[in-house]
Image 1: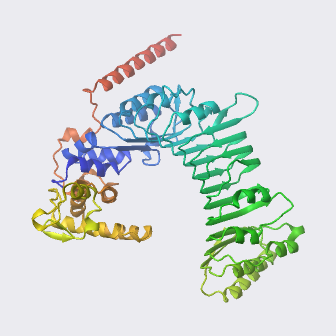
Image 2 (image 1 turned 60 degrees about the vertical axis):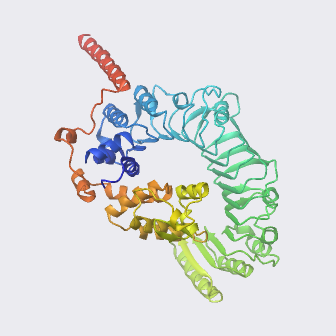
Image 3 (image 1 turned 30 degrees about the vertical axis):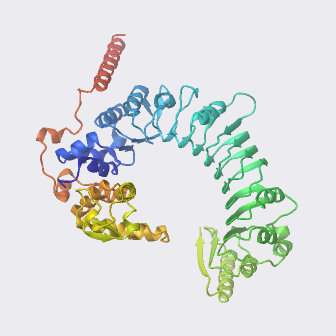
Length: 423
Length: 170
């Protein structure tokens, strides 16, 4: 231990993260104390780390954080995630940020500040590469003055910002690759709530819990787009065919407008979504390299009421993972089973089938059988089911007969590995 | 095959270390026994052996992430002294992922222990004075920013107390 240089010890102690552990480590010997003071690069104050945090008053907590931060030099990562604290005073927060901003590369902060601190003002034009901000407001962005030349990842949760400022913020980050927005409070400037984002460098976008009249996204290099729990009247996306991964979960979009044809898609994951199948199919059908497709709890708002397996088989020869859920409306059952399984083109490359039900009935096993027939090279079958807490006699009987059918069915496919996931 | 510390080592394995890679490319050392790669002081033969094992597994492209993770988990089951030597050696060779792996392991061994327990585990000398031990959060007043903050806090306290006195009187 004697021959280990103090910088290496500083690096080891930086992996501790939690401020309390760091302080304890600094109380062991002179060398470790020096390591904590001069060579520590990561410090984290998380309300989960130490139960005593919850018992301290806010001002005592502020003093504790200030004293700990001010003992370090050259901090590169600072994380203050205190869920139980209502708000920190602006003077303390400004002190922490100004003390560390020259070397800070990543910042996690989720506590309200009173009065509001413009984090962008304090941290702009420095070395920040990752910013995760929550429960704060961003009032006024000036791209000429506030620039984040190294910021690659920006995540805003429960942040109040105007839509103009959001777009200006993106332009102030010339290297940005990831943008995450969770439940932002978009200030309404006119009657419509619109957000227009454009960036040439964005690679991944994640949007959760947002409700807008219009959302326009212009990103020439976007590779991954993930929308969750959103209600958008109009969603316009324009790119240059770089999109690889498209995921939508519990989203409702009245008008979906994708300007450039997306022909490079590799993963499409849609769940809990009402779509117009023909329009959606038109969008994804040119991606002949699609590897993974998941359509879960999808309601088809069209004359075509079901997933057309034949066109999937023909359009996506490279598909290796297919996930479908069995949801049939009562009035359409028999017909659907027949039509959706029409055609016989095999899906040669599918090695994993992920099939599930929300309401089990006697035809589910047949549907599984038909799909199995179509995948000659299948290696794994996953069956997901929803089992209600109060099981009626009919439900138990249904589950039992399904189990017997599956056992019989899988005797023909001994090489396929079956996994059951019930919730 | 390259020559390194009186041993012959496979080229691809050694080139996995950025520092060695640079030196070999820039100066061409390692080509013969007399012109062997000189390693930093912190890398002794035992440490070198372990580092080479790590490089050997990780530089092979075919291995899956799961395989690498399992290898890593088995690899780090060493005593603290060895781990510290490894961290130090890997740091001098600038093998970042390896340094992070060993540092994380060592950090896990530190979490939850009292200072005495940490000193025992890592054989550290007990060279802090009693006063230093009791006050880990010393108020460093030699930093001008801290002095400014202290003044601001003092001013804030004075204003608060004046306001309190005024309220009491009313």
